[in-house]
Image (cartoon, rainbow, N blue to C red; front, side, top):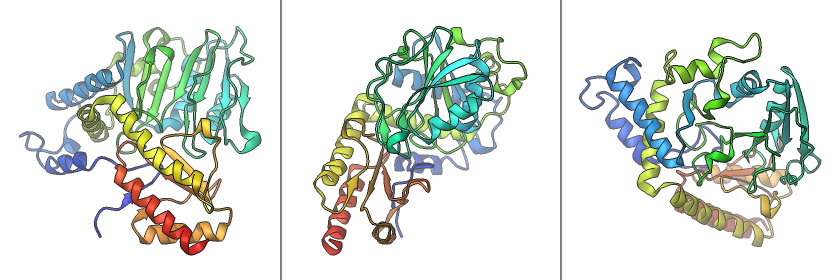
Length: 360
């Protein structure tokens, strides 16, 4: 069997050219006589790899000089605690609940201070983004927190909330590098890379320098102080070296594709093919309010659990894998990240049309 069309929500599809390049360099990285996997993170060769990765990411996102870029480990879930530990000076912050990950971050923040629910779409199974134009934000809140793209429910903030002058913290795990971003609108952006950028085990943090300090909550572990990593250029301890190396290759791949404007156009084209079909289909239905649809994660259902299961089984046999919806919601979900080729979505829609004809 050749390569399948992998619609996994993460760890997810990576560009084939990146995988081939990594395979070629597996035993000998650029004449060093060893793999990046077995290289000291303190070596000159590796220092070049991590510095180049950061420089390329800065170029891609147009990151201003007063923002630090950190490559950390622990996944986005560790950041759910890291954020309040580092930023909750007044022990109060606002959270917008648009899905399971935002909810988990909110529950984690409650351990460290007063986390306030500013808005929620839980009333309709997180199938939309609530109105965030006039939120009950108070002066004593340290920050406002969002999960910008909701992997499980397939929603996306297309308009950032009015934070009334408070800093915005965003978990961008599943939309990271899928479109241009104005970094200056955020105090902190972070992302687990295993959805759109690299292998599991790396998280990228982009944070405004004035937010990094020793003034953290008592009991914050050294490894969870953002200043620890900022002061040491992400080399305080052994970072996830190989994962960062792959991320660096993906950054170059995006630059070669034309950068984030080109990536957005590529992603819009793919998503349109799938959403247009879902809107015209009599069997399959998208589950998200149209104006809030994600370009990255597309959940859909037939309305019949047995038929959903049959579809997932037959799709898998046909080489369209990981289409089963998240265990908390059921149905199906196609994650169509940057590295998913347009042809993958076209062929999936062809398969869905055939399935509809035989199961209508």
